[in-house]
Image (cartoon, rainbow over all chains, first blue to last red; front, side, top):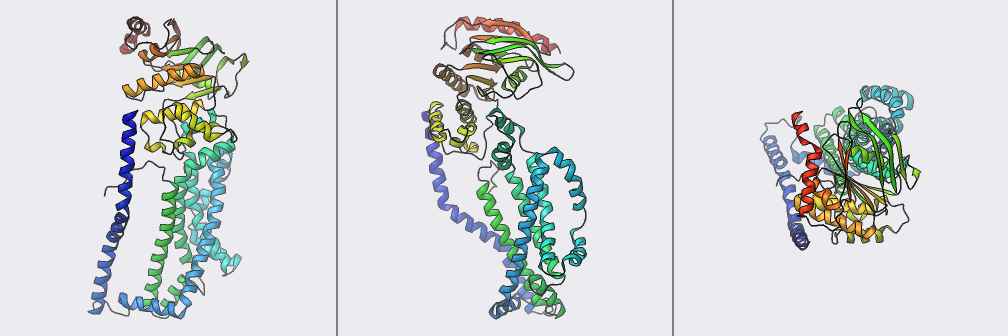
Length: 279
Length: 244
């Protein structure tokens, strides 16, 4: 027993000293991630200035920065970002909620699976953009049709991951619950839900990705605000800087929202015994 | 305490499982069930624990016939089967109903399986032996009168195995639990059990029942036990399996 304790103490010390340069390590990773984009941006700027890229098709990064700054100074940039994020958020919430309810039922109950799964799979094979005309017909070109379209996009990846997550919960862990005479509800709450959390979070992340795709689609088709609208506006007014600014905005916002989910995922799943990548 | 009357459970057209088992176990007795693989040892424990309800015959605990998982039974599996998202001190009281002094009980059993200092570890940070200790504590926490152990130490190294066998012995001395131990380690059975059942055949049947009169704790190198080991090896008739 003594020797066991001794090794524990030493691992704890190890962890502490690790934390010391963990901050450094994250900075290092971030810096490494910035290397390639920086090189590309510098090359792009250089080629634009020397006239290799025609400015009416591909303006220099500095021009794009300038136009972003102008928009934010005028104040309407934040409005566009805000409305896009709002649509995405509401659509994401609705899609996820529906997916959780249906996915949990289909994953756990054989009956629900036979009842709903074939239909849902059939709906899944409809390209989601095919819904657009119908949604516009039903709900007009206002907010509801956009939000519903995003919700449809988010629904499927979340649903699929919840179902497969629940169905792949280790039978051995469920038996542990059975030994303690757990009711079905207790089994779900105390074993099945936590055990399928990893797969649920994967679903959330891919759902968010699709959500971004559909927010663009929704805003391309008849909106008067939002980043997607800026894209259309840029196309109609022949301003490539506006189009590229919008694309850059999508990239930045998409990355930020995904990082938020990723951080949440890491926090929620710290108990997982997975491989740490080589440095 | 525990009575098994003419219980059979077979699979795949009666080729595997066990049949016609009769056994009565007194309180505080340690029964070892030995047999080569495929003779229904683990199936027997699954039937007794209530996880497998599709059997013929009757299982009685204190005279009442068992139909579902019984609260007097605790089970320790071959693998620890800890819940990876719970810390050691949350895993141990996992089977308790909400209002039963979870923390105190957890700490008490952490103490009795010798895991002080590991309360806040997650299963991924434990060695195999420590994880199995947690599993033992988790089974003890509901104060079961009958402990079923399904090859509990077979995945551990020889030294950890001996430590945990001694732990089990200490638990038996402290709580006077009735223990059914399925194993394929003859030394383990001889070291811990009062009676050893030898299952043979497919489906398995009780072939022989040996009583070990020696008092516990026993010496691991005991000459008498060594003789019994020879006898058991003959009874198991390993040659037959090699010929297959």
